[in-house]
Length: 371
Length: 99
Image (tube, rainbow over all chains, first blue to last red):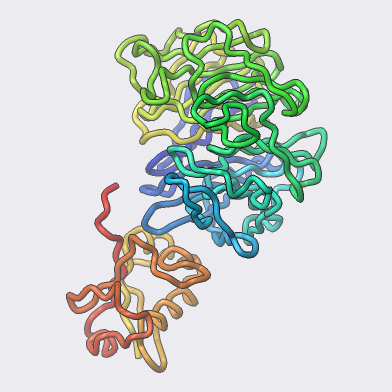
């Protein structure tokens, strides 16, 4: 019988949650890398037993761990992330120029076809790639060397490259997002990049429609519709139908269009999920009610999904990389909270139940659908 | 000379060692030569105590020995005689910084 493996990164380690295709009874393993922050872990689409994890602390820096048995055992691989050439500077909080400094890996995106190739999005914002299973990492420096690079400035969480979306129809096309620079696209495998932020409007920057400077929180794509992108921005939920060349707002009737994650249903490319958060200063659900919102029309019209979720006194957040879908039928939706709960829906969001309730704050959730 | 090195728990787990690490070092015993020998014996520790390239100590790592904080000493300064003699360990410590 098919099953699912949910990979959960938290403030104090990684956890692996497994169930069969019914998704009713769960086994929890962990903490892996206990005491370390695990910003992200993800499996290779080409070899589901090959997993990569980003493990870090402020004390001892960055490690990358690799598993070849689905997370039962792990081996540290290369952890040297050195910027290409003279790193240069970006804008600092006070408007001065600040040298690029590596802090941590926020996101690991394994290649769709090669288990040894992985992209890493890091803080300070840059994109690295390994082609030897994580032993060595090289920067794709064309991104950071874009002429707008010196204008990029950190968001409240740092100048982080947090989202990497690979186009399944074109191996040379990659989308990334940086807080707070915006979204970028390459069409030549990472050599050159261009900002794709036309149509975004951010009132928190001097020119609300500037080419760069937008705090994009997350991007999502359905693999069957690679030209259609969905974006949760600092404020506003956005959509592009031309690979990011142009964006339009689809916030519609959401109670608030601030939030962090966004995900697309595995079998319905026009069904999209967000978790509205009250505001940029109040990072919790409106009215203390945790609700996922679903649009079945590609945006604009949204319905609240609350069955099984706490509807009083709930003041958790759901971070940008903490929502994912499986590819079973019906599609499963999963998200983790800063309160340590991981919720799952085995029916496309109609109802929810916690898999676990008391993990450390959840930083990321990824799902593997297993044969 | 056999130099005794005490690692914090997270790094002991990473290096898969328990208790002290003993490193044979020929020649001058300094922070640099001790850490070079440590990273040679346990490559997984590269980047966790000091920067890969600059070799600068990470900000929240401290070096103690003989009840002294040696963190701000030159990496090329000789370590205290009891460390060289192997009667006292060289301590790599995670700074008290919350978390």
